[in-house]
Structures are given as C-alpha cells and as structure tokens.
Length: 238
Image 1 (cartoon, one colour):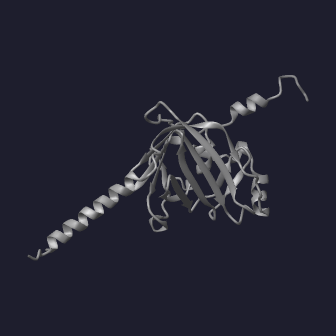
Image 2 (tube, rainbow, N blue to C red; image 1 turned 180 degrees about the horizontal axis):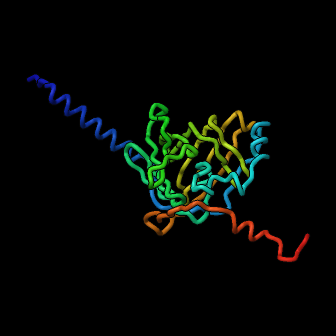
Image 3 (cartoon, one colour; image 1 turned 180 degrees about the vertical axis):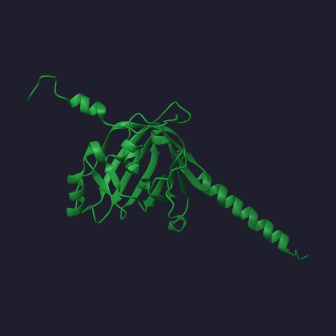
C-alpha cells in the first residue's frame, strides 16, 4: 500500500520543522535576562591613539564637553560603566531589549546578521528621542555568548572622565556572557581614525534584587558641585 503525501501534509511537516527549529534556537540562547548592577572597578586596555584621536582628547573639557550635561549618552560604554544604575536585559525570539536606568534609555537590538542593521539608532529614551551616540546595533548568539555589533555612531566619548573619543567610523563589539551568576562584558572599540589598535573595556555586573529599572527623569545637569568642591576658600589668594 502506497501512502500519498499531499501538499497539506508537506505544509504541516514544514511548519512543524520550522517551529521546532525556532524553539530549539531560542532555548539554546544563554540566559542573560535580569536586572544587573555594575561591579567596580572595571578595567581597560592600554590606550593607543592616532594623532587625530589625541587631538580630540587634548581638546576635551569635562565641564563643557560632557554630553551628560544635556542628558545625552556619550556612548554605550559610558552608560554600561555608570555606577549604581540598574540595567535590565530581556531576551526575545527576535531581539534583545536593554533598559538602562541612566537617562531612561531603551535599546532594542534585532537578532540576525548585518542585514538587520538600519540607519536608525537602536536607543531612545522614554520621550522617544533617539541617540546615535549609542550606535545602530544587531546581535547574534555564539555558544554561551551574546555578541552585539554597533555602527553608525555619532561623535561621542567612550570615557567622559578623560575624553576618549568615538567617531562615525567607530565599530563597537559587546561580548556578553554569564559565569557563576556574574554578567561579564568585553567591549571592544575599533576605529582606524582614532586608535592605532583596538581599545578594550571589561565590566562585570552582579544580579540585583530589583525586577525593573527606576525612572531617572533626567533634567539638564551641570558641574556646579564640582566647581564648588574645588573652589578656593574665601580669602585664599593661592
């Protein structure tokens, strides 16, 4: 007796195969979801700047040039490395959502290859303002790691304390993994116009007890506290 395979049976088999494949790929993703807080100190590689990178760094004035003064993220590295700010990671079948307490940033990163990359920044705040300083990103899983690649950056600063720059040519790679309950991120910045060799930062985060990030509600800041701290006592002429 011969069993005839109808188009309906083929369609059902293909649908089932696709569903199993999708479920398998999602279940195989490493578990990164949760709310995290930065462990200090973080670390970084030695800095090797080009002449242009050094020029930008030398011209940097913290009290005037730090984008944070206008509630603007200077870079994704600056946001990851902010102490005492909650960060929530959520994983979905087609994307990763990262919510940063600082500046109420929401970063939506599609899973896939470079074809999913768009000119639109991946990060906006709760008011809907997009920030190209954070770049346009896409991501994929490799074993126990989530790899996020970001391009199309606006000029900004990887380290605002010293004015380490990024440019429109900058490509950033974030490598996320969880080992023994600790989130590890290796953040690599490549840009031949600014760096003679890649600049690498490393962070670790511990799992927080909170289930969500708080509302930051940023207003334009200033460094009056810094100026007051360093002001000479009244009557001191030195």
